[in-house]
Amino acid sequence: MSGDRNADPRFPRGRHPEQDGRVKIFISSDMEGTAGVVAWEQCRPGQQDYEHYRRLLQDEVNAAIDGANQAGGPHEFLVNDSHGRMANLFPDRLSGEAGYLSGRHKPLYMMQGLDESFDAIFFLSYHGSASAGPATLSHTYNPAAIAEVRLNGRLAGESGINSLVALGLGVPVVLVTGDQTTAAELAPFWPEARAAVVKQSVSRFAAESLHPARATRLIAERAREAVAALRGSGAGPAARIELPATLTVRLRNPDLAEMATWLERVEPDPDDPTVVELVDDDPIRLYRTFVTLILLTRGIAE
Ligand SMILES: [Zn+2]
Image (tube, rainbow, N blue to C red; front, side, top):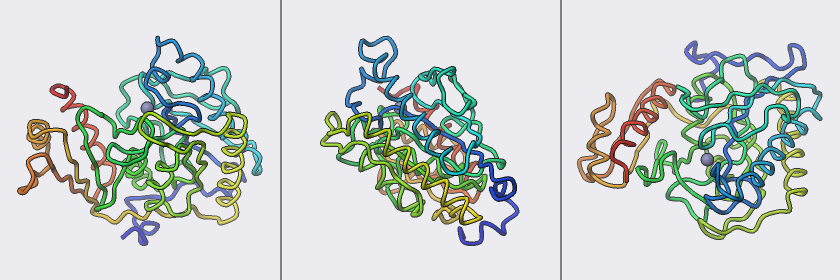
């Protein structure tokens, strides 16, 4: 059904970039995918190394903005800070006079701020999913509750799950940055998206990273290519996500799975007490159900 998406009135297309040449880009920024980052302490406010690594993250976000602007800019940007307490960037140091959406409790979480007026989405400093490997600091939303998520049978990390919102609002994901596993996980859902692989994960806690100077150059180049392709093609690429879509979620224990079935449109797997299925023909409602599952199970996750 994804091929019919452009004609489906439920999923209006984004503003056409050819209209005025300006492209409106939504950036969802995480932190675990930044070159050099290999430990939780580096991503947690108050820890010794955090101040250093948040600057490397900021440099990568700015590189993506600067690169995009090299393709017929200046363009328009909104950065949704999506990591931890969601206030990791310095707003006054954002390139491109980007808008900054920060702070905790956002109904659309890592996709808050996206609407049909955007032309493209960047997923920056993303990381591999809970059951993927090798993947530095891999997890899927809540590491204590979620063991694995599949979207229509394919392994899905946060990039795949967040793509449901992109699909619902008709805005294509055109760039992802992070390690090799993160890039591989997005590809089945957005085969035309560019990837800037800034590190090769060795394990959950080790990676061989590009020097930050090279990482930012690579990100800028991939962002420039992604925006140039978007402006050249007239219409953005479509997601390869069939509707109705199914999220198959494996939780860390049967208690968590049972709790998940309290929600509407969440069914237990008769063969596996740790697995539930979420099925919906509305991708945004499906995403919201998943986020509600995350928030609900937080109460008993260890
Ligand atoms: Zn994160």
